[in-house]
Amino acid sequence: MRAAPFPRPSPHAQALLVLVCCLVGGPAALAADSLETTRRYGTGTAPYRQVGDLRKDLSALCRRGQFNQVKIDGLYIGYRGKDAAGKPIEGGKTITGIAKKGYNLFDPQNKAEDNVTYHFHNDTFSNCLVFEAKPPPPGP
Image (tube, rainbow, N blue to C red; front, side, top):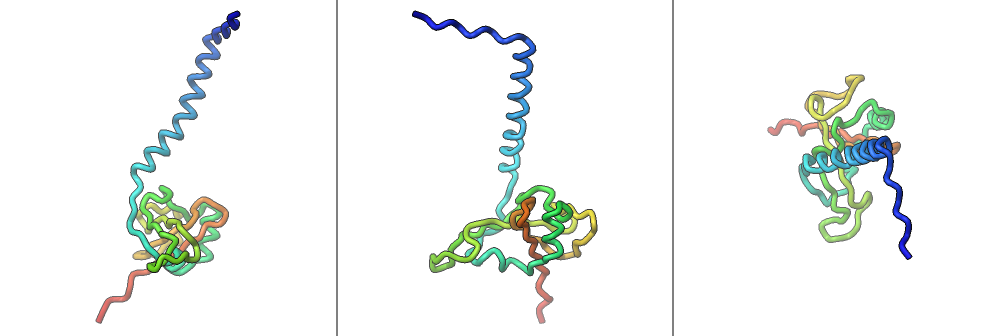
């Protein structure tokens, strides 16, 4: 005995299905595109918290969407989660995204300083941390 065939969907239902597929495929396509354009600046074995000085005020703004990367982790530093001897370190395996005034930084309140690099851990999340790394003073 053969099972009854499924009825063919109406043209409206077919159009709706195509629209849903396009909407679902759109973000996936954007995510794939963003992965292709991310770049690793470097890799470290130190804990990510040593990348710079923690800025509590900027971290609070980051959590509220007022001090963030334009493109999340477009340029980033990867942390291996183990020290040079292979022992696990605090913070584990993670990344910090990089932004500067005039590069990849959303800063509507103009809090960024010139010549300072900002490192974002968990940007767009409620536990976002922002670290600042100022350039070293000129040598003797």
